[in-house]
Length: 489
Image 1 (cartoon, rainbow, N blue to C red):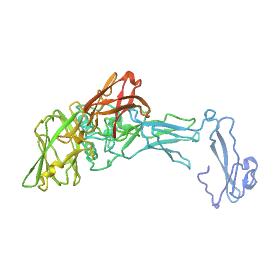
Image 2 (image 1 turned 180 degrees about the vertical axis):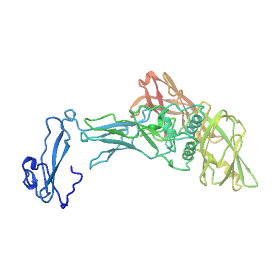
Image 3 (image 1 turned 120 degrees about the horizontal axis):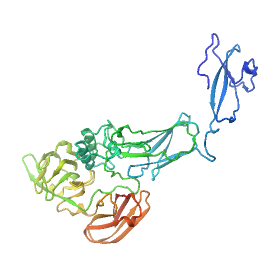
Image 4 (image 1 turned 45 degrees about the horizontal axis):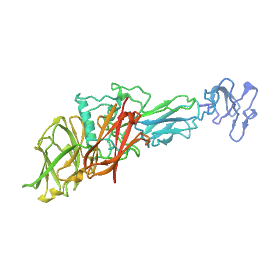
């Protein structure tokens, strides 16, 4: 173990001992701990008085009992290493976003130059990981990894925010937003990132081609927007001497710059809608080429972007023509004969009330099929964004089914003193609004009977008695939706 190499003019077999001629022994077999089966001398070591490192002589013998000596250091784990009594060699920490949303099912790998390493552990629903029994005076590296559900938290609103950053209209303010915006992992934020993110939104692809769904940053690292891409994804522990409980990481969901990712049972899938609606009309007409469907809106005012899924009722899309807004093939994806997705955004707000926004051209001449068309959130969530970046529902006029139940984002958000939550009900019904912290603990609950249509509930910070990231869940019979809000001091 201690002799890297040995050479002799005639011997090729060597034996090794801790004692030799300097101690009065002329052959290796005569040394105190000689073990015939291994051809080496064994020795029992105890902790030295001066710490955990002891100096040794190691002798190498040839077949004629000639020997040479080298001096080595032996480090004994657990001797004078500075640990406190009862320390169990623990390494632990938490993994969460910059908004303190804890991330579960992160694979945390701990590596070391030891036979049983690397070892892995998954974070729990509180984003925590804990491992014990690690040897002292040994080096370790901690690396988190998670690569699933690439679409979680990613929407056209993120594309809009990144585009505004690129054009210096509204720069991103956090180094973690920079990391999330870099979808193609080239350490720059460009239009190429927008292309990758839009393909995720449209469900053209299910994964980022050049990136994982999550990237992790050593929470102790001081990052700014100027050095965001110098982030460290591994925590190195040199000469581990005592349990370490704050080996934390900041989790960054790729493509999600507005922090809408949902985690754990608290953050189970919910529709991203609010009480305001963008109303659209679908008008069909037969043409020489087939069937055209003009899309108009009576309240398309100061709109910065939208996205949706459309049920095409079995019609085959031929192409999309621009109208008041510019649409290209990059804005549309045909998932199957019944389903298409669309994602569009603009640098400046667009108003086109009662104008043809765009035209969908289909094969065939089944005009009655237009009546069965609908805008849904089956694949890409149906939502629009106004000039204030408020998220709006998209409703096809004459189809009340699309607005049966809708929970809005609280406004303002974040808030210091008071915030208002809007929600839509298809019929008068009892409603329960529950506010929870990131662990699922109930902070407050509001119950009452509410009317059909748009309703509001106002929350005061004084009644919440906490700050940071909270979740609010609206339950109404079989319907339930959850959203995130931020309370600041």
